[in-house]
Image 1 (cartoon, rainbow, N blue to C red):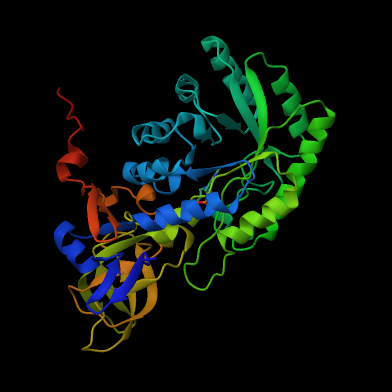
Image 2 (cartoon, helix red, strand yellow; image 1 turned 90 degrees about the vertical axis):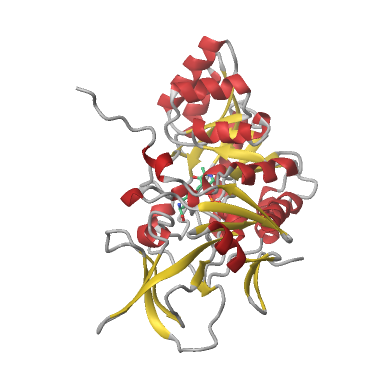
Length: 417
Ligand SMILES: Cc1ncc(COP(=O)(O)O)c(C=O)c1O
Ligand SMILES: N[C@@H](CCCC[NH3+])C(=O)O
């Protein structure tokens, strides 16, 4: 199997395409994705289930480029969405609406309407108020909305506090102890059909135990609901499996799924999962060029042409992502560098204290940038968003051109007075 990113004699390659040549052709900053990695990771989830009924719904927020969604749709993927924008992307990419689950704490009426119109599989609802709204919209349309309730099992995911979602303190889901009442209310609604239980406890988890603990609580709820005469057809266990950014050792996909199935011990119930990062994370790099070297008495700054607007994870979560030379130097010597962008914020860095042998004009690859990279990018400092390229074997496709300044300002209006 061709590795997604690996060195050959003349530098770093994306599958069998030289990253240096892609940077020359498309400029920097540039996101490069390995199509095979996306495919292999989704397939690894899918095949790990064996004969258990299941649906692997890729979390669209992770990387929502339509070409990426299309690659997964062709494999038969389902999709976990959190907005109407994401739903429209999935439909444009050829995704099957019957394989779409709709998560998120605040679905608007127009979003619910459109989702019902195209016939999504299930709404993962998060509050009583949302139940009332879904019932009202479905009634108005004379349709039945399939729902599951996202419960908050109060399990510590042992991840960064900003990306932990399953604790009582978090805004997500409903308290698992009060969920039975909400299910009873849902059953009393004329246009709502409760078919599942949903739970997502956080992101970048590197241990299996919190997932299994959460499932144990979900199974107890399923029992309670059965006693109330409410039959559950699927369990949606969310996403959250972590990847290796540096020295983390997340469990292999197969072990994670097998641990869940062992706990579940029910070969007939359908299991839905919503992985994002574990599919996309190591399928992408962000390529950047060193603009200037600025050594000072206290610190060496390498000012690169990618910034926090292109990849916000280091600034937002102090996240560590490996940064490697595209063509390692044979001259010069290594030094410690802070890799900072051109944006006017002290927090604008992609890496600190990195040991690298650098000269202005060098290309660097920020690794593990396939997840929550481009999708969290912005136009801060009126910087155009980077281009995105997809590679498979020795082929490359431009899947989103770099934004132009016309794109950035074209729709704004001067007040004519
Ligand atoms: C409801 C839901 N599902 C799935 C995901 C995907 O998570 P991850 O990328 O960690 O797999 C998220 C993000 O954390 C989420 O909020
Ligand atoms: N955006 C976060 C993950 C949040 C997951 C969304 N629920 C990250 O880059 O790690």
